[in-house]
Length: 385
Image 1 (cartoon, rainbow, N blue to C red):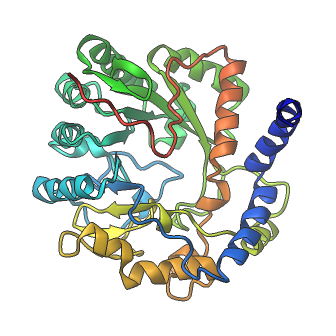
Image 2: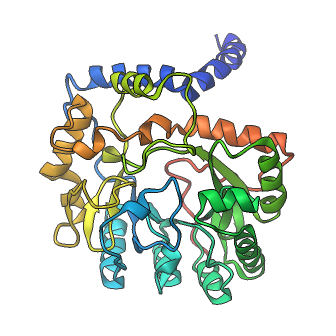
């Protein structure tokens, strides 16, 4: 039996990969799986705690990217207090929640004490990730504070190395600004980055990933220049497609083209939609203490409660969370209207993006020095002796 399972597995492997990264097939399979599950579990299978906490250091941003909903947000700019953040970290440790992301819909490096936020998480042995648009990394003191804090991953998001393309998508941003910031970050990482046991072995942290939102402007020539400009500073890349940011941004020139007219495409995707995974995965702490469960909740429309008035355990199990989970299991969003037309789940296909990333890397001769596509619960970092 075992002798036959090897060849069969090798034959079926490509088929499974194709199913996972093909939205129509994947959606149909997961849609009917949800229909079966909700017969006995109306709220789905709820884990005892979130897998991670996403923290908003600030909702302010110094760019107004064309495909991003931040520029359409009406919520006033706020900055997270260290006192609230420390309470959050302590509860994460008590509950055994391993992962922390310092980024939602603003630019986290605008927080005046962002390096300290990173360090506080690392001191409590949380697996910390930070994402930035890279515009402020040229500041030596800022880049140094981030490196010394030692997050596992530091993602720098940029869409092109061509000045005209980047200016169109990223609010006039110049490539040399990002390149200078990446060079500063990589130099400091290689010189003073803390050496720790990590999912990549004992290495200097942080692992640097360049992330790219792929638009129709990302032509083959743009792609070549992108890798030529940013590959010297990156340990890995992550490519993903544009979506409507929970219906904040209308489909336009920067969105992925479909073979079907948009009206038919959206109707079909709604017919085979499946539950968003965030209500079973993550809590989002916004800078003012509001708890959401959506990474595109620019104006806190998906409100679950407030922290620290309610503990993480209470927030994870309260009636608002149960209501949201039932809405996603039933595909009935009368009480959560902002979820109805969100296309995030229609294009947020990790398997598809992983396939796209590795294909582009091979085509441009780039071999990742560290695999930044971490599993959900990466191996715990061993304590230093």
